[in-house]
Amino acid sequence: MKNVALHALHEQLGAKILPFAGYNMPITYEGVNAEHETVRNGVGVFDVSHMGEFLVSGPGALHLIQYVCSNDAATLEIGRAQYSCFPNGNGGIVDDLIVYRIKEEQYLLVVNASNIDKDWAWINQHNTFGAELKNLSDNYSLLAIQGPKAVEAMQALTSVNLAEIPYYHFVVGPFAGIEHVIISATGYTGSGGFEIYCKNEEVEQLWNRVFEAGAAYGIKPIGLAARDTLRLEMGYCLYGNDIDDSTSPIEAGLGWITKFSKDFIDKERLEAQKSAGVSRKLIGFELTERGVPRQDYEIVNETGAVIGKVTSGTMSPSLNKGIGLGYVETAYAKVGTEIRIRIRKNDVAAQVVKLPFYSK
Image (cartoon, rainbow, N blue to C red):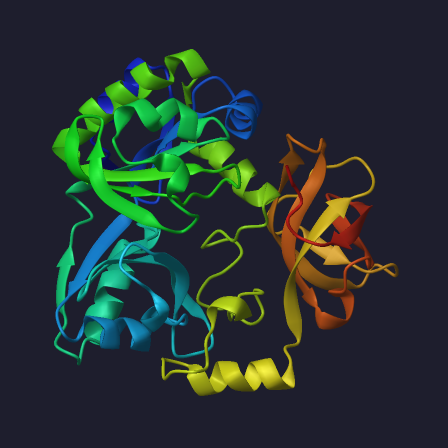
């Protein structure tokens, strides 16, 4: 297991640390529900330095990204970011990622920690375009400062007007006394805020200054357990749960990041899926009876026949009800459809709902 640069600090803070995606990561500090509420109503900080970062540069950079990614990176201006995925050539997904356009011929790809080695091999395998590739994953740290008070709490740390950075845009500028950090208006919580990229040797200063600036706003460290409940309330996919090498972007409701106006891996297969339809779809559901859905629980119809499987599930801290994502036969995917989740031996009533589960 690898350690993030701030591992000792998380131990000092009393974090519960467990293996996650090849790293020892802080899972909780004071408890999932309390941390969840801090982000929904105030401001919290996640250390997500386990994420991977690849720098793609040169005249062939855009050509490579266009070929391996489902979304259309040609639409990106400098200072913009884009959610995308790597189709795997067999109708599945290698990984989902964010593409940042840093300079005219330079892009940063931010990938999931569990897939760093797989993604690095994949992009190198398909680099017939002469793009220059650098794996920066072991050298960079990432703090996600999330919540409705994030802008106000962090403004004292930078001359950049944080309120003027639109969603999925970023600025490279000074922050917390460090020059040239990426200040990105992205996140995985649905409550606003920023993700700050810096070098490993800078992250302790960044963490300390962030907590000094945020003290008056009740800022707290937040673990990965609350990150999971927050993202699930928004209906955001988690790689390894809701999407993987066996799920297509069309099945997963990611047609919006699959642009057929360009050539890319699996274009023809996915285009055929989109036009012909798919046999299963990823849905969001809420339990209408008490219960907590969990990954791999069976989804059944009114006669008890299995129609799918839960991919992510929890008791929503914001809604105080069981919520989840799962794949079902397409006939059961329409919003309002009554389904059941098999929790141990009981078939608990649920309903297909429109995402996100949570809205401000």
